[in-house]
Amino acid sequence: MRLLLVEDDLQLSQSLSKALKREGFSLQTVSSGREAIVSLEFDPIDIVILDLGLPDMDGLEVLKQIKVKKITCQVLVLTARDQLSDKVKGLDAGADDYLVKPFEYAELSARIRVLERHLSHREQPLLQIGELSLDPSGHVAFLQGKDLELSKKEYMLLKALMESIGRIQTKESLEAKLYDYGEEVMSNSIEVHIHHLRKKIPKGLIKTVRGIGYTIKKGLN
Image (tube, rainbow, N blue to C red; front, side, top):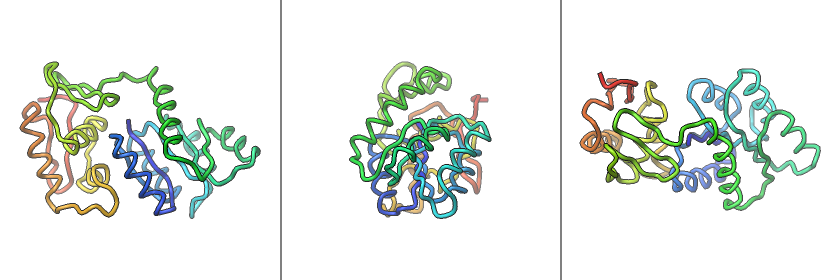
């Protein structure tokens, strides 16, 4: 499940990012409306967690752009606007759910699970390439039907690549998905995880795009 967190409050963004990654979600974070729209246009996202009070534009405008550009995703609005009229505006603009700040993380997590169920009817539960499959709901991967013994970071890395099959993931984007903000990251951490992951999955599946990043192609040839 691919999430995009659009929140300009740095402390809240860091806190939510850490909690969501702990649950195994593949997560991108941005702090402005324009960044959100660009991310949605170029990277497939399942659920957007959207603050309305953004520094460059109102979150309602982001909702309108999602609708205009026909971007398929679920949108959960986070906002301090607690009036009924504000909630109606958000839902009318295309939001799938509306959560007023301050909130408990447990409630946010529960609402995300509801949105996941809404998505399940149009998505296959497993990500699969040949004999390699990954079950996002169970946080496990299989090769030829047998459990793959992956570390948490290896699992998150494989998930990020399989969710974006055919698209190049830069080293920086992968680091953002694997590590919490402020967490110390060695300069070669991604390379090390790729090295270990390649030993556990079919040879040649992960392709290195020199100077840019990594990708999993649609075919093994």
